Length: 258
Image (cartoon, rainbow, N blue to C red; front, side, top):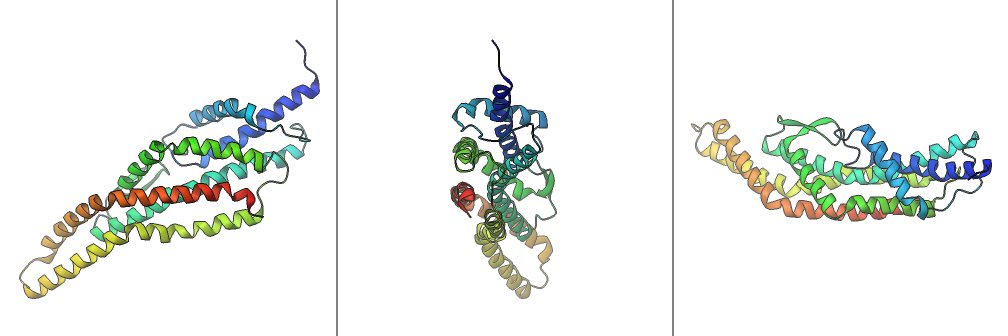
């Protein structure tokens, strides 16, 4: 069994460029990009996904993996993968921001845990929401939708020197600005209810000045906050799932923004 130089180059191009796009996606996508996931595992997973989906992908045309142009093509594949993964990170980061708003409102802003997703410290409430969001993401096969999305991207954005456009990146940045608004929307019911509790405690302190408001107010605010979190959890997860649907559509339209 023999192979010509042209066949070897075509086979290398068929495997190399998809591997870089899929690998960049796994480095930026939620769950897979968690600091608790070893780098070796991510590389092996990218290689395994590339092996599985390569027969479904269009063959690169006119791209020599051994030429100087290949560096530009590789950079484009990495940019496309990171852009798709970053879009879905917005939903998780909005949830973390909403958890921070709730935590500071109920007096738990001082309690922090290490976020395994990003490797930074976040309030305990944010970590609570993040765990439920990760479970929900995997339960609805979000990881499979992510793989299907990157496979579809090879048809809309074939392997070439010209890839994702500046308008698509600007559209992505504008959606990043909605992170704070969406997070605030998630925590607004709890924050509004806790504001009423604080007003009530203020009225009580005026009616009974001898009452130690700090000794009584913190446990009340904390307890009411936990109850409100539990009551609003289904709505928060439902809102998170709506964000995922919208962001999956946004990720699928990145290559259409021109």
